[in-house]
Length: 82
Image (tube, rainbow, N blue to C red; front, side, top):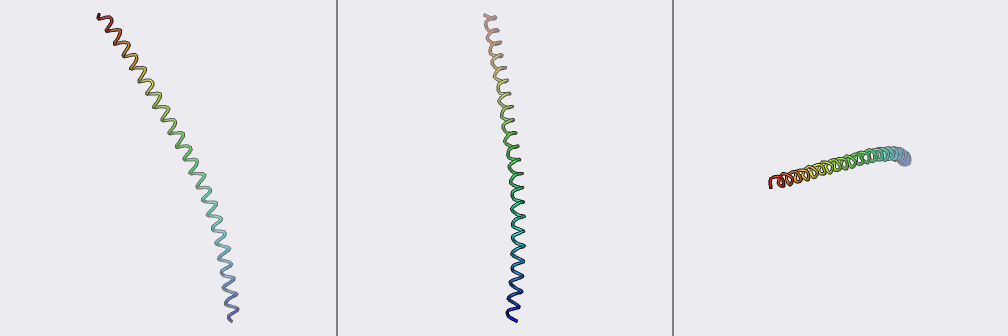
């Protein structure tokens, strides 16, 4: 009777162990997919951030050009008034 109980418990624990291995393999595949998705979102975020930075520098350059033109026009007006 004791040998039968030990045999049944061994079979049950072996089945549970095999099922646990399958679950861990599926979890590994799922985590790899999630990791690749997160990496893609990170790439998109970095490229968008770089794009915003370039737009801000472009606008800043325009502001400097208009400021320079304003200084030139004020200087010309000042020379005409003299």
